[in-house]
Length: 106
Image (cartoon, rainbow, N blue to C red; front, side, top):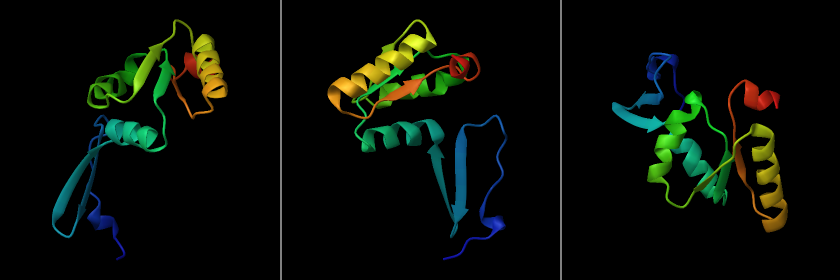
């Protein structure tokens, strides 16, 4: 079934919800939960991070994903090294969560 632009509902840019209206139904999914569920589906058990204010939604959503363990690091470069070391030692996929600007710069 092909969808038209009218099937999509506009939402404010500051919202963390993704809404799709199709066939009269409205499904609501939060990006943070979809992201964490994707990590779980891929076998990720540990997220290494140094979160900032932009990651608050993800941090809050971790309460609903008890199979994910968040390992806090004090600096972004250390967090990346911890995630890399864990992935190499365990052979598992890991995730790394850092600040939007300074974290990616480090």
